[in-house]
Image (cartoon, rainbow, N blue to C red; front, top):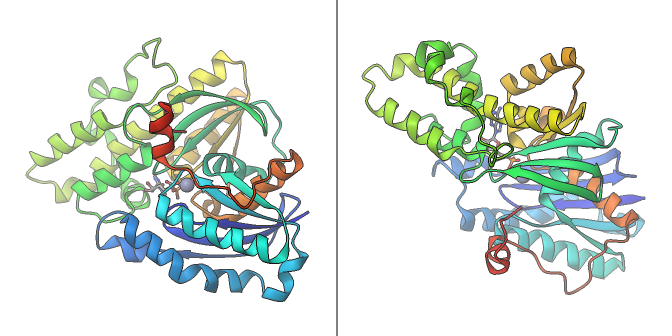
Length: 341
Ligand code: KG4
Ligand code: ZN
């Protein structure tokens, strides 16, 4: 089954053609990072306008109008994400599906992230899955593609958001994750934060055994940095210390879940799964018998291949949309009184 995937939930305009949820036949992505950099973060209105400018040129790189009838379905990110951005992708996907008479597959962005490592490996179920990105920090017990439980999530900021905010405080630019990651490689975490003061080493409370909190960490670092006179010369140490705390918290909660549920397979995805310290730490878990699957760096962040791949499994399960399919955003979760996935 050949699926055309479209992703426009945040600041990447991405289109991909994927066969049977595995083989990426063609893909193209336009990243808006350079446009948002001047504002130190994603500006939703600019993001939507960038998508409307770039979506058809990106689509054209992947498929010509005459080739469209050869696809079996059109998968598109339905949400969660920035509503104006989502509407561009969904509008284009609906128009394409309508014009060639193919089914529409609305895809959940979090499920798509979790799928990304599946594009590259046969991953045995069940497993503990972690989605760590700019908007989400979620820990799952995944039984199969359609059955999973949310074990925990962030109670305030997402982990990627914390990286981005700290980078802003340090004057490093956007996005913060890769910049902090790079600087941290030459820093010494202990030089900035000694063991006795490390929040990631505090014991878990029963209630928050699988939950994350990042706003306190960000605030603690921000206050300390504001009072530093030699900030510039200690930048690498600050980055190393922050990265170690942020990532160790992810790892500790994940390990809690792996142990409690007796799992030996771990899947990490989302932009933060590109973090070099995180990737190196989970490789060390192999010795403890925990096998970790993660996507190659280019597929950790937002991309359409994961949308098409996830869409294939939704199609197999008969989860199709129709001409009235709507996008969903934070508002829908607020209305329903639910915590946003
Ligand atoms: O998955 P993604 O592209 O978009 C969302 O769905 O949010 O994730 C973007 C996030 C940003 O916050 C970015 O700073 C973070 O992923 N990120 C990283 C790294 N690369 C990207 N965080 C830590 N280390 C990295 N190497
Ligand atoms: Zn994402």
